[in-house]
Amino acid sequence: MGKQLWGSRFSKSLAKEANDFNSSLHFDSVMFEEDIQGSIAHATMLGETNIISKEESQKISNGLKEILEDIKQGKLQFDYDLEDIHTQIEKWLIDKIGETGKKVHTGRSRNDQVALDLRMYLKKEVLKIKTLLLNLLKTLINLQKKHTQTYLSGYTHLQRAQVITFAHYLGAYVEMYKRDFERLENAFERIDTMPLGAGALACSTYNIDNKMTAELLNFQNVMLNSLDAVSDRDFVIETASCLSIIMMHLSRFAEELILYTTSEFKFVEFDDGFTTGSSLMPQKKNPDILELIRGKTGRVYGNLFSILTVMKSLPLAYNKDMQEDKEGIFDSIRTVKDCLAILPEVLTTMKINKDKMLLSVNEGFLNATEVADYLVKKGVPFRDAHGISGKLVVYCINNNKNLTTLSLNEYKQKSELFEDDIYQKITPEAQVNNKTIVGSPSENSVMKVIKINEKWLEKKENNND
Ligand code: ARG
Image 1 (cartoon, rainbow, N blue to C red):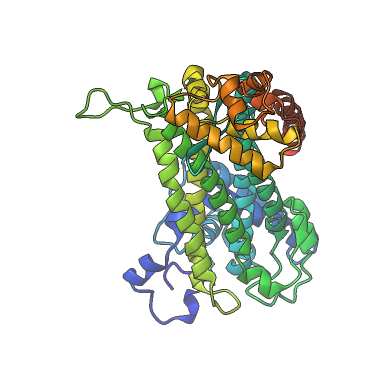
Image 2 (image 1 turned 30 degrees about the vertical axis):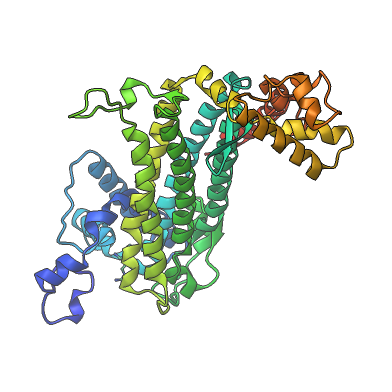
């Protein structure tokens, strides 16, 4: 009956509208390779355990391999009237090898099959995203090495706060993207469970060897509960969540760089190859690429929320609602890959305006904390020292001076403890480099951290396959 795998139970075909509404082939066809590899492993296991004969198993595997080649070479066209990728591959197999093809689904349901395909697909894509993250990290670390003495203001409340270096600034994002990588690494461990054998929801009476199938497909674990294996999508949610966090980090970085290219800051300038013009205002150079990274964060968050909502309150086991798990995560994967691929290009071609960065340090009393710390080191309690430094700042503002142009006499009017050495303690270099703990902006500390991170990178690069 009709083109459905389950047609025999029905007295008439599915209505065309219902069929179109029901079909997922237009988006799940991207998993054709996973579906075929999964079926080859399943058929191999069926042959090895004598559930089907070795010849049948071989015939199925060969047929599936040919189908894979044919799809890759564009010789096979998807029939979008079919329900999903599983139906399509099985139909091609039966068309190709005849009756034997009908045995591939022995001891299997599309419920465990789709969970398998999606897990395989996510494993492959998570690896790609991890590679892109490593490449971004390498770009950032290389940039860091050139800017351990490039001083600029760090901000709190977007108000000038204390001196940092551009290397230190970039280092903040290095730590974030490292954690993003580790989060994916961690999520991968839970994606890596092989659900076949669960069948529709309660397994089958064949002596399925799912450990063998798992080994053939390079899975670390097999499912321990058949209901869970076909009905949870927490591995999709977890991946979508990791991707959302990556986008959150990317969007903050993008936002700051956008801000730093404005005439008000002018800390950096994007290459013409990565900026666009205005159709009306001839002077404009717009940071579209970074705006898009910032903007695309919305859809990735949306996809996370969509799958969370689909799964909320859904009774066990499989429900067709769960077909809605794919488009969102596919979109998130594509979006994150696109953003991660383009960002290093923007970074390596952008100009860094050291002079402008330094200007931000010299105005705004960023050294007021150092002035207070100077007094603390001479025994003044911090709260009092803070008060004296604050008064000096007010004095400077009223007299159009700053803490480096103030005379020693003026300093002494607020505290006798000030001596000539105050001036060398409040230069940008001193403000940064007199800090010694690892994690601080000093050149020494940043170089130490760069070494730690280069080792981290090397280790992750060697393991990421
Ligand atoms: N296209 C379906 C999905 O993506 C495959 C599983 C269908 N199973 C079923 N019993 N209808 O979820």
